[in-house]
Amino acid sequence: RYAPRWSAVCAARGSLARHWDAVVARHSEGAWTEEDALAPAAVAASLELARADLLDEACLARRAKNEPIPTSKAAFKRHASYVLDSQLRAQDMLHPPDSKPVGLFRGQEKVWRRSHVVELRTATQWRRERRCVREGERPLKTLRGGKVFAAQLFGEWQTEAAPEVPFPVEFYQDGGAAAIPGTNNFGNIELLDAIAVDRLPSNLVYLPDNAARSAAARLSVAFAPAVVGFVREGGLPKPKLGGAVVWARDAEEVARAMAEEKERLAIEEEKKRQERFKSAWRMLVKNVLVDMYVEDRYRGDVSGVGGAAREAPGLAPAPPAVLLADVL
Image (tube, rainbow, N blue to C red; front, top):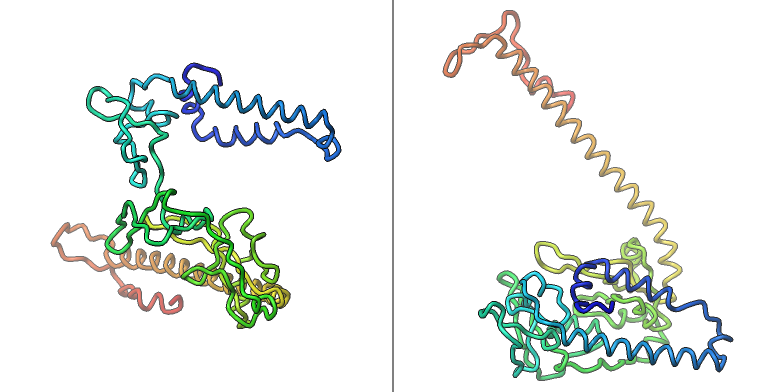
C-alpha cells in the first residue's frame, strides 16, 4: 500500500480489488457490542482510529498525485491519476471545461488527470441514484445506438437531489382502488438497490417470485412488475423483471394463487419439454429412414456423375413418405 507506485499495485489486482476491499472492511469492523460502543474508552479509540485513517488516506492521495506519468500505454489504463485522451469512453467528459492536459504521451497524445474526467449519465440512470435532472438543462452528449435508440447524457452538476414525493392519502386509505403508485413510464416499478424495497409505502408488498405477475394478472388485481436490473441484448439494455409489487390487502390472495400458478407453469413447461423430445425423435427417425431409403435405392451405383442409377433386384424400396407414415 505504501509503494511508490500505488497505481501499479491497484492495476495488478484487477477485478479482485473490489472483493479484497470488501473482505478487509468486513474484518475491520470487529465484534463490538452496543455496551462496548457506548463506553468512553471505546468512543475515544474509535475517534482516534478514524482520525488516523483520514490522515492515512490523505497521505496516499498526495502520493498518488505526485506519481510520475506512466511510460507505457497499458500503464495508463488502470492508473489512478492519469488517463490518455484515446482511453476516454463515449460517456466521459472533461470537467471543468477549461481543464488543461498535464502533458503529452510520446509527444503526440494528450494526458489528462482522472480527477478532471467525469462520467455522464442518462436521466433514468440519475433517477436510480435518487437525483433528477433540473428543468431546462440541455444534454451535454447524445449517444446513438442504431437508427432509433438515442441516449441523452447529463452531468451531475445538472442534477439535484430528488425530492421525496409523498403518495396521496387515498392510496393509503383505499389500497387496491387504483393502480400501483411510483411506477415509471412503462408501468414498472424500479427496485434496483438493496433498500428500494424498504422505501415502498407500508400498504405495498413486494413479491419476488416471478409467478407473482401471472398470478396477479389471472386474479385481475392491480400490480406493477418489478425491475431488479438490466441486461444487454443485441447491444441494447433490456430491463430484467423479478417479481411484482401488489397492494398489501391483495398480497395473501396473490400468494395463494402463486402456488397454483407455479403448478400450472410447471405442467406447461413439462408439456413443452415432451413436445421437444417428440420433435427430436421424429427428426432422428426421419433422417435414419431417409438414409436407409437412399442406401437401398442407389446400392451398387458406380456409374459416377451423370451415370444412370441401377436399381437393386426385386421390389423397389418404399419411398420415405410411406416409411414415415407411422412416425409423422
